[in-house]
Amino acid sequence: MKDNEEYEDLLDLNDFDEEELKKEGDELLTLRFIDGSNAKFAATEGGFVSLEFDGKTHKRIGVYLTFPLSDPESFISIREADEKAKEIGVIKKLSDIAPDQAELIREQIKLRYFMPEITKVIDVKDEYGYAYWNVITSFGACRFTTGMGGDSVVSLSDARILITDIDGNRYEIRDFNAMTPAEKKKLDIFI
Image 1 (spheres, rainbow, N blue to C red):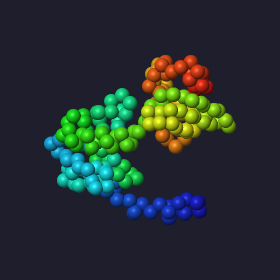
Image 2 (image 1 turned 120 degrees about the horizontal axis):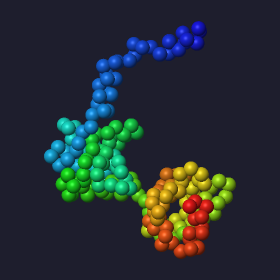
Image 3 (image 1 turned 90 degrees about the vertical axis):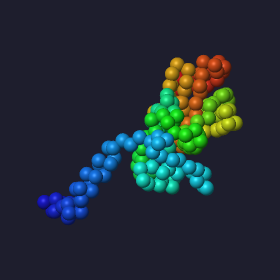
Image 4 (image 1 turned 30 degrees about the vertical axis):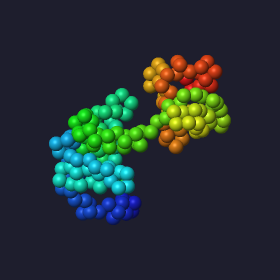
């Protein structure tokens, strides 16, 4: 009984504003579409992107893809740039906004979804539950580490492979079938 009283003391129901919670919930569930007629994106001095939309100016925004691998030009979520990343609105198609503004969004997408293509596998060593990769990518030589279990290496199709390292960085092998037999053998532990 004492524990129950302590819990009730900690949970003071008077601290909750039911109307405010309902308003926040409704706002979260409202889908707002962003296009060239109701929004304006602009570059900031710091290299970020700002947005004027729905009577508000957002000094910095975050850009998130709903379908990053299959349709990166559609249903792009524009969010506040803080830790909550609350959605401001959605761009149905990137072609719905002015070309110069669309290019700003594409630049932000490239930064968020940076994914070098692995063009050559030099070596992959398996030690103590981790794989240590030495590869050549579309951006040069690279070494990274992945876990051996889980979803570190995922087949996206018969030929396309997505690799995520322990820091969350993503790499891509676009055509596994085009790799040399020696490279394929190095990847046997994953495929």
